[in-house]
Length: 141
Image (cartoon, rainbow, N blue to C red; front, side, top):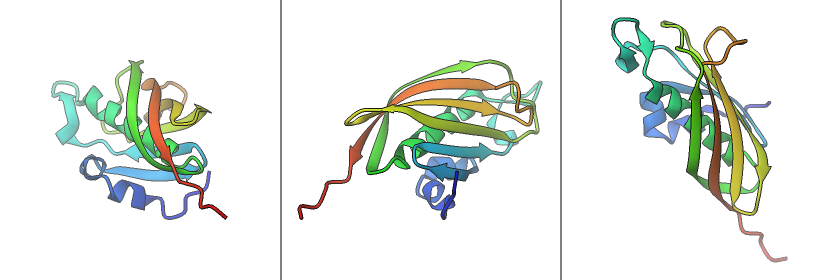
């Protein structure tokens, strides 16, 4: 995946900036975004595990980025997002989400995503979602 000026996508999203997300790679229908561990986002103070809502936001943002990178897409919104949490993310570790558009219709993109901490073999969570999007209007010749 290539990443021409990738951080501009995150810069446009205040919520993503607040969570410290970094767009690492983006290409036609694919994206990779990471988020560092931050004590402000801990869901269980006894263990230091990041709240599932922060992981969910990361995966939703990554899915939206994948849709926005699809050729012709101009806007997007999440219709549905199902997340399966597989295990707790390791406290102190960066979480990376990867998303890909696996089927695109006229105005809906279907996306699969995974989130991993530094253990890249065992996902923290997986997701499947549907995103509505608008396409750029073709200019009449």
